[in-house]
Length: 381
Image (cartoon, rainbow, N blue to C red; front, top):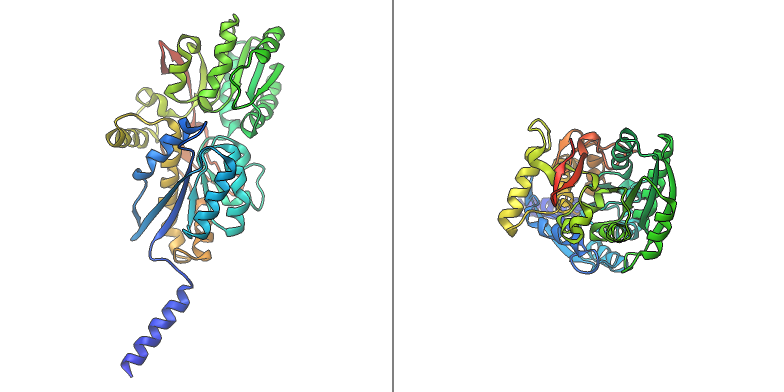
């Protein structure tokens, strides 16, 4: 009789679990090869630094490379959902890549932590994007800092050039609205494709408009091409860049032609110059030290976007476990809810305060003004 009762209890436990997993499964999609690998490699390299165990639960990470191809991102997301049965996904690297997988993660009710620049992955909020949490600053936060600097230094006209994709398109929309509100006119706006090797035609049009400053909106080293081209043609105005250019390879590629560039980005680029009172300074320094120990070099800020995804999961998982077990819809839904309730979480990029309307969650603590001085990033004071 005792054996029968024990067997019955075990059976009831299995039925109640409903497919629950003994560990938490997290998928990661990075573009560690292909045109945007410069962004994806530090993200891939950060995965070993993510939490391995939270609230008594082991976390298993499945890392897939999409080769910078949005179609491959969709294939990877489906594989993670169907075969790996993930409870959450971190990815993808590029804006178009991330936008492509949103319908599938929403249908499967799998929270997505998106380490990508484009605010289009969370705005405008809807029933699908409510499953996405963006670990980088939204464009309007970064644009606001640049516009404030322009207004304070007497910039009246700006030429805009950005990539012909969601990153560049959203930046033009956000910047145009903010600039016009401060009396700054966009006198020329140009686009270029990510695969373009020349923007000579766009540079001619921008220079013909004679703007006081140029804003380049492009991710990674792509941001250097317009600036180099305009400098070679004699443009002598001020250059502004978005946080998409926040990596040392931009400095190496641009050389003297990016000297004096002004950018708003996270504190990681100039962490030693940031006051010790900043709530993110210790987190950023610890992450940089751990990454350097593992890989022998400092990480690009893009790696910090994946590191912060791990911090968000670490905060949310204990709350989600109160509502369900890993591997279940109840757990994934509770994880989504817990991520949305994140408050005052210091991370390497800033401090997160998520709300139902804001799935990026940064305030002014998530940006600093930076310039290029003597070939290095420097805090603009």
